[in-house]
Length: 112
Length: 424
Image (cartoon, rainbow over all chains, first blue to last red):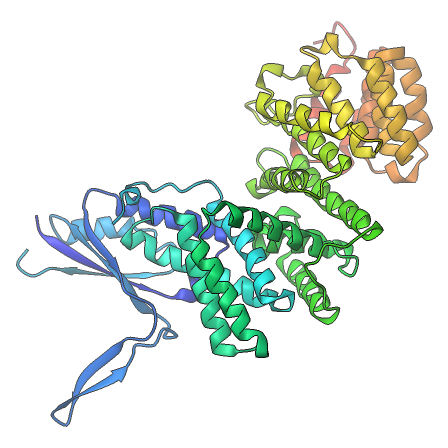
């Protein structure tokens, strides 16, 4: 079955406003989705500023970024199995991330 | 991923509960002047859980995970700001120590309960305005958010937020501490704490089916705080009495409404739906409460609730005992609402005519002028006396006053019963 990668971008400020009780509800909804059979893997990316490496005048230059304060940062990813893009999008549309103001980028894993 | 990652359901109110106790705990370590920092740290911790668990799985011991992350965040914050001045190193050392203890440590468990109690006692400090005590307790010791508190009290967010800001300023400016007061100060503070707990309970108890669930959560929180206090070394008989009263009343909650959400009066309730566990809890603390000489309003109200709980059906209710308790309560409180309740017991013991005379005396009381229950009780007594047109007029006037939807439907049902007999 083809694999798709779901990249979850989030704006922490949206989540920061939730009460502990609401955060628990959100966690439970996310967990329930995580446990659906089509989800194969998922990982969280650590908070804090990462490093970006890009060539500058022919030499790689390392800089800090993206910053956590940026409006939307990549928070984590899931790998799911789906028959087609339509199918992958259908699964993604049920993800609670959208309800909490996040963005999901869906990409087909080449060759899978 | 841990084994428990397979389950998507966490312990009920886990986050809220842990947020409350961790805030109380951090406030003790950081000092009350840094209450905001403690709250932010805890909020950050909860956010961290929300952001990592859905990917990496729920940790084997969620409470321990939250506890450790909160301590690390607090250590970082103290290091970053060094705002506690020369004491920073000592605070960091204590945070380390506490983080390594982990919440399974029984001594720590006891310490956390003590922290929560201290927090509530500080929230009820005489320097904190009355209207802020409840909100501050819910926010700091119980893990409610501003919006949840506003919803629970049908107030708006801004009003609650402002109340909290003022209370926190008071804590800083008056340099309030988490120390328990001594001597008569302790007695007064305990009374103030009990008042806050009972207020929470009543707000929750008054909530109706169909209303925001958050209001009903208040009952559970009041019971939890009541137990925390009654089980502590500070407990006094009236704290036991309040807990008994709350447990015995809460036991009736499952029987209070029918499937349609309509109110069912005590006398029509299916007593098999009363929560036996809460009744047992209520009697346990009621027995403890009568150990001393203290007789408070909570004692008398608990005695009334206990009399109802003892009766297996309406007929076996000891109404003369209940009437006696209402006499005591009236002597203690001089409250017209108590007098109205007493009239209901009076009707059972000496008949509706005598009760009606008592209710009519209350009608000129300005405190009851827009209280729909006064008219409802009067209507009920008139109906028992077969004075139907007058009863109907009572229920009609009651319907014009402020009451909830289920109460309105109840009054309408009573009004329908007033139709002349024989006419259906």
